[in-house]
Picture 1 (cartoon, rainbow, N blue to C red):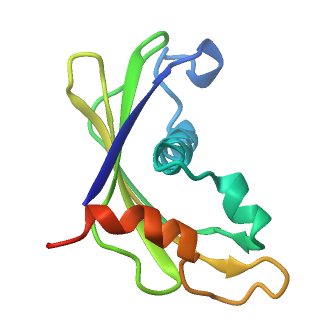
Picture 2: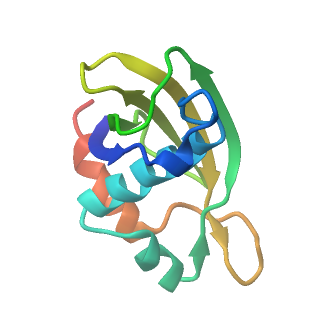
Length: 138
């Protein structure tokens, strides 16, 4: 299993009139977590796109457990629990507050597509090579 963490601070513009993070912003927090998890592998979304591959989100599942509020420092934990073997990758993502309490749990599925044809393709080899060590002997 591959796991990474990154942090974001809640900005005022991300909250609603109740001083709570607006629910739609969690999709952006999850994206930050995914982008940074790939960067921590020494690879980037930009690298993927330069290889002619795009990664649209095809599923997004979110459970809201506790609110986040303005100026909270959030930790986004991102996991890839299974090595991708075809055109899809699944990320499990949790958002925790400064006390380590889980605020939000999510699962996001993306497809690997050829940017020109929009056809499903297998995980890019360079990405697979960076993930592989986390799944060896498992």
